[in-house]
Length: 349
Ligand code: DAH
Image: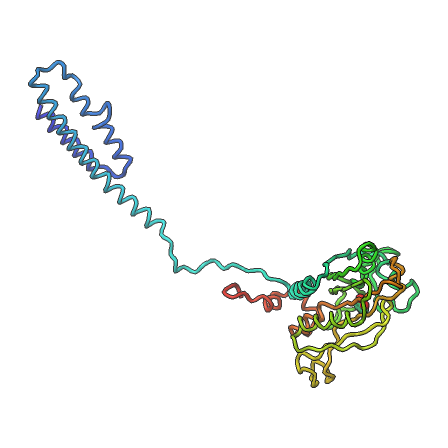
């Protein structure tokens, strides 16, 4: 009996010494301690033995079982630790390694200016609307008091698509659309930013594609004072609280009276410098009281309703605000230019 025990032990020692991982160990466990394992085999024919022999066999096999189980469990723990350490070592993250550079996108300067303007006008109760870039002649010119043979059309050389359709030359076209749409809702106040197109040769101050934002308010008792107050707000929001505005009489077919609006120079404050060409003032937009012909053409009773309108060049505002000297920079998508306006702290520069 003891020999048998000794034999099993020896075989076990041999087997266990060649174990490399927990899989091998599991197999070993089954081989010795499993249901059909060596220890079970050992006690299989117990009934054939005498009481004394049975006792002896029981004791020996139990002892053997306990010893083997202890050794297996000891090795099991060692292997678990080893395997865990290996896993930790192989999955270690080197936090000192340089990270992958993430290119952060940013807003185009024209989008920024548009957003700022929209924010201001929304805070004053305006709706932001849009209109089509392919417009009909009737809305772009005719109903704005610019009939087909009007000489002022020459100032806006246009991209015609058909005789009646063109790329809009001014967001003013949206004035007509808004008036036709809002006949039941008075007063109404809208701004409309968007792209506009003219058949100009591109140079530092001209671009065949550019952006405008139109403003229009129609209601009872709307006066020039409302226009002035509104544009003062705008000038101050865009160029600083200390700005003043001045109205210079001008001509636009769709407003009467019409004004070009100047803002006191943001560089010299009004004393005269190279930016304002010594005048102390910088022109920023066109505006006026909506012409009765336009109001009537859109179905408004001019005895009751008046309105004001203005149209501002977004590029012009951006150029003045950021000191940009060439309008083409907005459209050539040079990343060196664009990144200037999107410096994100800690981001890609
Ligand atoms: N549409 C004009 C332009 O492109 C700008 C303008 C002037 C718009 C006077 C207006 C306005 O609404 O009242 O030159």
